[in-house]
Each structure stands twice: as structure tokens, then as C-alpha cells.
Length: 453
Image: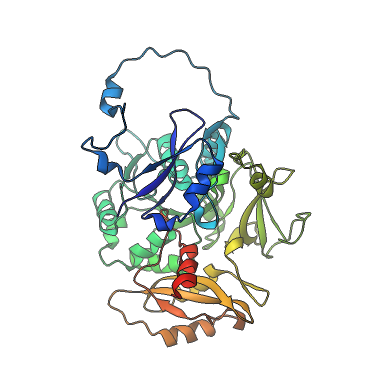
């Protein structure tokens, strides 16, 4: 299959940034034309670079990279850029709408690196004369988690990054085996945690020196953490982070210093990083009055890492940024009596059953805890009288029998009536995901609406 990348040339004349990545064009649909139409600086590039390795089909005046770096230039003195100028232009995920250019400034990025490196956080990456931290990673560097948390974070502390050009489970597991002596930290997304738990080729000894696994991009259920630790050992500390492309990206983290002082809060995304404010508000309250602890609502964020705005989209910027500087996250969650935050689900992905809100992630965690289930995804499908009902898609564990009737009863016994899987359970070979490992509920909904799958 060919790859299709949408590339943006803006801010600097020679700056190219990947907007989005999908294996085949139908995964993007007709959104490309709309993106180009509203962003005059965007140019489209197609296919994988390996198609051009023999210099066939290259545009005229293409410069060979090796020739470029060997060329001597007289560089003029360049003044330092204004810290409030746009430094990079990542594009927000297309899973909840058309991709939007997120204007992150030099100030945003530097502040977020410093926030993530605060001494109180004790998230130590070692680089000495005798030892250098090695981080095997599969995260794409055009995504906020990859370029900011992994790349900038490791480079800031002198760590070494070993990256996969394309994620394949055997290749990633092989990397873990090869670098097991030098790797004490891993940055993962929840589907990769599940993969390592369920793959018999991922051996316990490959992670024997691991101290910390930091997860982000999607919620990770406490039951999934427990399964992982039963296989690989309790010496591994799981830390969850939370952020958005629009926040450079980190706003909240569960850090070792918190665990040392107050014990583990598995399932929590922790507390706001330094110089960051977070509040929870009723989604129907125009005044955005803060709610108290243990009450779900939309999470709002304020801090120096908040984006300047969306490129060429003033209305969309106005919709996400309040007049007093708070950013609407679009995520539903709450905080407990000790100030720890918990994410329930995306506001746009909540299933509405007769007016009741059902978070897909809650049902997915329950389904995954059933014997024989390796992965699960839940969406809402239309219903004549209830509006929507939950429908589950599951992937079975290799070599194990999956009893669908028993699974359905298992879920019924654990949830309120309106949360039951009245939309059915579908067994799949693979659940569609984005390039960063997030479950693509949008694709599942399209499959159901088009083919009834």
C-alpha cells in the first residue's frame, strides 16, 4: 500500500510538516481538498520516499541532501526570533474533524520542556561518562507526544533515541531485547501496552531494567496496568500523562515524586505540571463555573503552553479559547479530594443513551478484563427509541476461545442498564487505529453506517 502524507509549507519558506498520515486515501476521504482550500500555504506531497530512492520521478531542481550538507555557505547573522512567533505548525488529529494548523510558539515549547523537567518531578534521564539512557520508540515525530515529550525531552537530558521507521510488533520487541541493558524508561500508548501484555514473544527479561513506563495519547485502564505488571513485574512504575497538541502538549502528569510521597494512583493522569491551571466545568454552563471534586465535566486548561491559535481559523480559535485565556479540552473528567485528575472520555465520543452519557473508555476497560479478549473498542450506533446504544468490537487472544454470550452477560452484570451492549458485539482481526495508536472510533462508525459491520 502506498502512504499518503499531507505536508504543509508555511511559517518558514522551507519548513515542511506532516499534517496527517493514513495508509490509504479512503482513510482520509475528501478532507484533503477542503484542507488545501482553506490554507493557501499548503502543498500536497504523495507516496512514500522510498519510491524516489533511485532518483526516478523527482521534481526538477531537487537537491541531494548529502550534496547540500557538504556545500559551504556564508551565513548572515540572524536575529533571535520573537518568542511569541510561531515555531512549529503541527496539525491536530483528524479523528474529530478536519485537521487544523496549531500555532505553537517558541515560548510555548520552551515552557513545556521546562515544566516537564522541573526538579520536583524527579523524572530522571541519565547521561554520564559511563552510561547513556537509550529509548526505543515507535512514536511518530510529527505527533506532539513524539516530537515534544520524546525527542525534545531526551535531547534536553542527553539521552539516545532509537526509532523505528515503521511500527511492526516483531521489530519493536526486538529493539526492547537489544537495548534491555540501557533502557530504564519507555514512552508508550495504551494499545502497545496491551500488545506487549498479550504477545508471547515479549519476554519478561527484556524489561528487567525498566523503571518507568509513561503513557499518553489515550486513557489506560488500571486493569490493563495490573495485567502488564503480572507479566513483567511490579518493579515497573506506570505514569500517565495528559495533554493536547494545542498545549505543546503536556498539562498534567503523574510523576515519581508524587508516588514517593503519597502512593500510587493507578488510572489517574496526576496533577497539573508547574504553572498550569486546570478546572472542571459543566458542559451546559456558559459561565464555566468550576465544579467541585468527584464531579464529571469538561476540563479547561490555562498556562504558558497554550497555543496561539489555529492558523487562518479565527472562529475555530474562538470556540476553543475563552476570552479569559482558558482552553476547552473537549475531554470529560474530574479530580478527587487530593487534586488528582481522571479522564473519562472525549466529549465528542460520549454515547448518548436516552439522554444518559456513556463513556466508551469505561466499557472498553470492562470488556478487556474478560478472559480471551486482547483488545476492545466501543462506539455508539443509532437506535430508533434510545438515540444511541453501545456496540463493542473485540479482538480475541491468540489460541483462546472467546465466548460472546458470556462476555455480554459479564458486561451486563457490571454496568447500569443503559450502558449495556445493546448494539451487539463484533469480533474482528484488528481494530483500526490512528498512526499514534489511538483507537479510531470514527472509522468504526463509518464501517457500521456504510456496511453495517
